[in-house]
Image 1 (cartoon, rainbow, N blue to C red):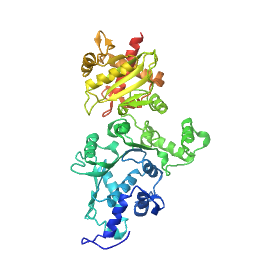
Image 2: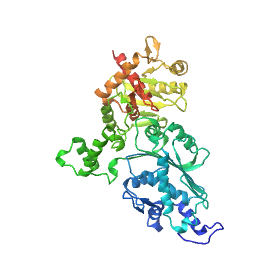
Image 3: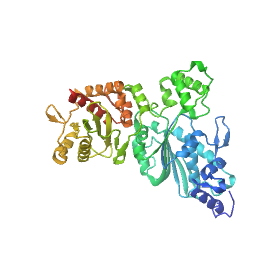
Image 4: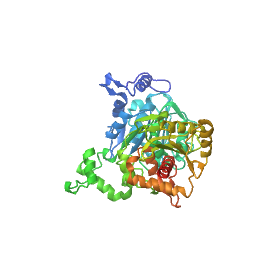
Length: 503
């Protein structure tokens, strides 16, 4: 950096001006830098980190860090194995934004105080590694504690807090938000995250990153609904870290799953040796601590009610829908075919912005094939109109509405407003009653179909809900804490009613 005239407070005006100019082109590839991205150029020349050997060295991006940058959006969610360097890179990127863009507030939120302090030591190392002329000039700090670094010449601040603080971010205006190990935040992580989001500016950059921790909770929900929220998903399995190798295993000892991994991802015998070592040490938690698949790594907190192997096998076979509507809320795999009969099973909810979804499953009666799925937070009237529209489209399908709770209102709208004529009746009454008698039969039909005819299911949302549908310690069966089961219950109802119609 150049050193020019100093202001009354001692900062170099030329250095400040140059930093600000760099901040304007941080994500641009400049000819003056040989076509290199400005941020990458600055990271490799200004940032210093401590490597695995304990040495403080110049930052050089690894495979995962480079891949993250190539796909990075304004909002991102990262599912990763241990020690991939993502936290370090995000801290570095946000540090560069903080020292080159005036008026920036960067907030980093970790799951524990110890973790927050550990991440902030990395940030302090970035600061300590800067040229002395910057540290005592344009980037002189007025405060550099274990929780906050303030750069008065730029009016920028880098702060760190913990996810256990329900008031984290309150009263702030956040430009960069890095949430680390979200799956392990204590308390009501979703409430904390929503409070942080409310403090973000419209163009703020967001990164949620975590190793997996069960098929439930805030991070699980954010990962599963990333398409709806517009977040960019990033998944980094353990073999992306070059250090994860062990003693070479004999080629003749390879198991089928090991051969498949080697063929699909180009793994070496040393990496398979590491995998065996991890499997022996972590046993049932190996898939979680060193993930290989973005679905299987979310282990159920209780005993999963459905066959996990069948779920995971089917999940790997799924392809996307051929069409979507209503902003992705309605997914279609098979359009209606003339002469075929269908039913639309509707699991109702209240329609608020929080809480459960309303779900409609479209199933062909003869084969049980899942043709379409609607998942949305609709009012009873909206749900009635969309369900009737869907049933009409599918050859005037049977409309099966759960009449528990809000279902009575939906049925009333179907009669009074939508005027839909083909409403399924159970024991002479409109709709389906999910009772303590019918529920086990519904779930049993669903469990059997997943094992016997898994090819009839096409919804990733449905299979994700099945993964978090567990036997709780109190003996009850249902969704894990923080998870949903609306797609599951709508499909279970569809299969049960299908059996009755076919009799």
